[in-house]
Image (tube, rainbow, N blue to C red; front, side, top):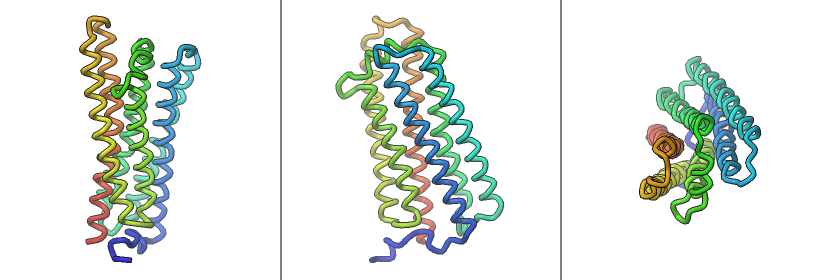
Length: 231
């Protein structure tokens, strides 16, 4: 096995390992938020979505995001109190920030659903060929799940970290492509939709896209961490 295949952080001490554990715990919460957001949108796309159930799920997403924020702040305190990561403190703080952004954008997306009347638009575009909301959500959710796998590999295999990090970037680009196809399709039928709904739908798609962007940014930070750790 080459040196490049060794664990990045096999020399870490107790405090560093604890911070990595917190990072994984934080990501578990974030992945659950994005999964529940995807399930919420799928529920709205159904014909028998009960408004009260949707409201409860949106409220639960807000509560989950608060838990993720608590985990994020706890992790920052741990890093600032002595987990030095061999000079990588700032990179890990940036990583925690970027991962927390994923949860923030997921919550923001749910809040748009709470204040907007997008049910009919979501049903219309949820299954619409290649430029569908369901495919868009699948790329977004998969990017966050692969990011979690990437972080879990930090203490095992550098090559997998790099491979997965690149995959996250590829998924973000694929999601971005679907987003623009959807926007073109939506605006080509703008005469069939009132202006407010059109603008809210655009805001919704752009906010969802921010989730994949934050996952991609997190993967870039991971590449930086690996590069510095192996220098």
